[in-house]
Image 1 (cartoon, rainbow, N blue to C red):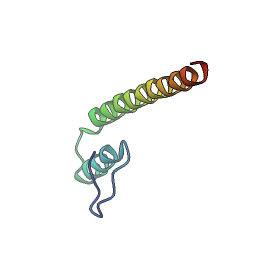
Image 2 (tube, one colour):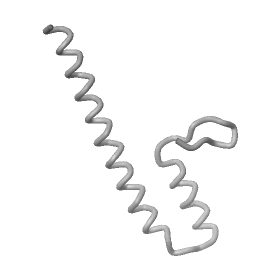
Image 3 (cartoon, rainbow, N blue to C red):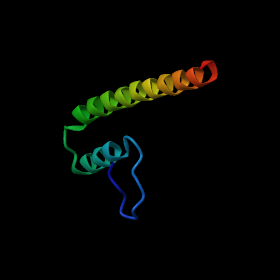
Image 4 (cartoon, one colour):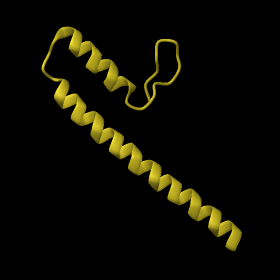
Amino acid sequence: MRKNKDGSLKLPGQQFDEIERAQRKLRRGRIRSIKGSKSRDKKELEELGHDALKTIRSRGSDETNG
């Protein structure tokens, strides 16, 4: 995970927002491709979060049952 200038970790998607703002300043047409990439990354993070939650819940139920 990337870090900000102050050393703190960047939030998921923050880097894409920064790139998008920079490209708007330069008035380039690549913003659409970045938005697509950002939405794919958000979906991937959401899926990973759901998988992690399922794993945590299954571990919890295994501990209470076993």
